[in-house]
Image 1 (cartoon, chains in turn green, red):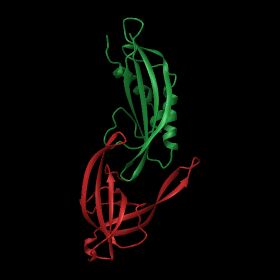
Image 2 (cartoon, chains in turn red, cyan):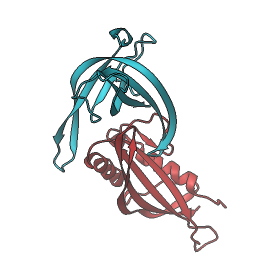
Image 3 (cartoon, one colour):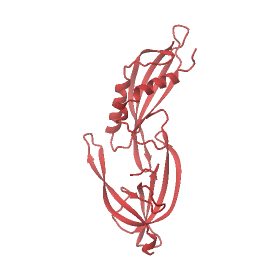
Image 4 (cartoon, chains in turn purple, yellow):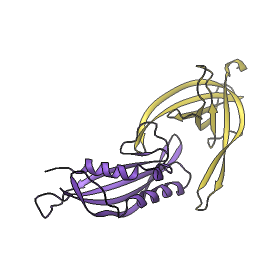
Length: 138
Length: 117
């Protein structure tokens, strides 16, 4: 029995997001840990898991996925374009998750702007899109 | 102060913006002037912002006083030493009077992650 699905789900999400269609917009790349010196705009994703009891012997965890877009453009349009691509790549998609069966599709919930940050006197915009993923232990 | 201490040169640039279709701004940088400068003290540090570690280096430069340089501007700078240094992009954070000489002023600047152009 696997006890945490975050690793395999992260691999599946990274595979879906790390494609030319997105990195052409987010020129700083897609990361689960943005390295020092990562250029803007870039995408960072994170996952957490809630345990949900499956109908059989295995679990059916719900994985919450948050995809963050960071942009230094002086307006919302750049971050919005990148986020739109993120949603296009993920929403209602089936993921290949090693050791699990993806139950249903990727559910898109919402996108929210977060408080702006200032880096070296330049404002940084952040948009976060939220998704839910259910996986069943194989 | 003689001109001898001003061995650095700052290319001061100001923003030119174009309003986009959703009222954001596309930025282009236009050169205001190239000014001689004396490099003063500097400090540095790292912090986490926007989910990433970044390094900021703060610089102060003494220049001849003028009224048209503001914190909205930036400066491009090739350090005179060491030779062969890359040109850095400096954000101008403050324009301060020089307490010792009314003919001079101090620019407080910094660069982030050693960004070069």
